[in-house]
Amino acid sequence: MTTPTAVATPVAVVSRWSHSRIGRRVGGALLLTAGLAGAVVTLGGLAHRGRQAPWGELLASPLVLPTIAAVVVLGYVCQSVAVGLLLPGRIPLRTRLLLPWASAAVNRVTPASAGELWLDTKVFRCRNVSLGGAAWTLSAMRLAHTLAGFAIALVAVAVDSRNLAGGRLPFSESAWLVPLIGALLVAVACAVRRVRTRLRALLRHGRAEVRLRALPPVLLLHIGARLAPVVVLYTVLSGLNHGLPFTTVVVVVVLAGAGGSTVPLPGGGGGVELAMVGLLSVSGVPFGAASAAVLAARVLGFWLPAVLGLPALLALWGELSADRAEQAANTESKPVRPQGAEGADPRTAPTPALVYARA
Picture (tube, rainbow, N blue to C red):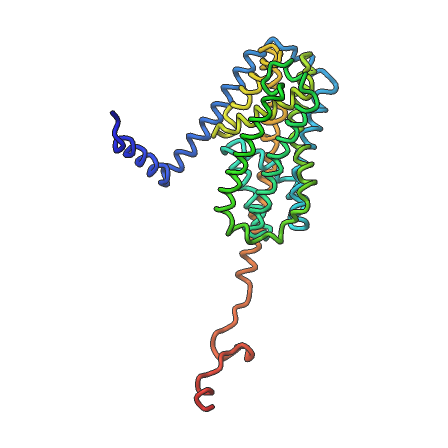
């Protein structure tokens, strides 16, 4: 029988190593390598499975590529406008336009959107937003992102549940919605309670910097951003002559995104792609066509914007470096008032103790 000491000792060693400087560096490199390897292997497998798809017809269509490009750009613009609504007048327009693309590039090499949170915090702090204000803004953005996914999925189920995979997906039956919604509400309640107890002191500051009454339009903008990958996959499926109802594609994308986000690897480590292929296959799309559709949709709507976001990341990082250099120069050039009697401001000079003694 395994003793508690035999289990606790290796766990303590691993924990101590992971918190060391070498452990953090090596662990980050291993995580990045595993995520990129998982993505490459998954995309390569999808390309192998979908090699018989009519790629020529898809790429030659006069509407597929322009539609995908317009939808992807519109999704990132929605995120830029949302930041401007929450922090009015604090973030310049150029920075707001670059930030979503740069965040996409950072997220592909960091797990669980950690890169986006880090970069957004850097930008907000450099623009004189307090740490509490940055926490409020990021919390509002993540909440809107999550609620937008739930909203479009529930609306899709409510509008046309009969077409959801011809009744083969469990979410096409209304009886499954009761435990699903209950589990989601319990998870959200537990998460809110835990976050509230840990961030109460932090969120007490910076509340006045964020315009929380803009949350309804921010939610609508995030619904538009969440619908962008749905439209991309729907367009690709139609171009491959394996179209599905729009509501089915909504559920497939939302469920695959939720499942892939649980994989603690950069970009999901291929988990989102595999989940999409499985859900499309269950929905009636042939496995080869589903692989080809997911490959095209993820490359055009997910990985390619990350590559295009590298110049945006470099430009944004140059902006931040210039701002930090300017702030450092202003701090150094600020005149320092001498501490002696000469040159001191008589209104702020301390009263000698001798005066009190004479009084």
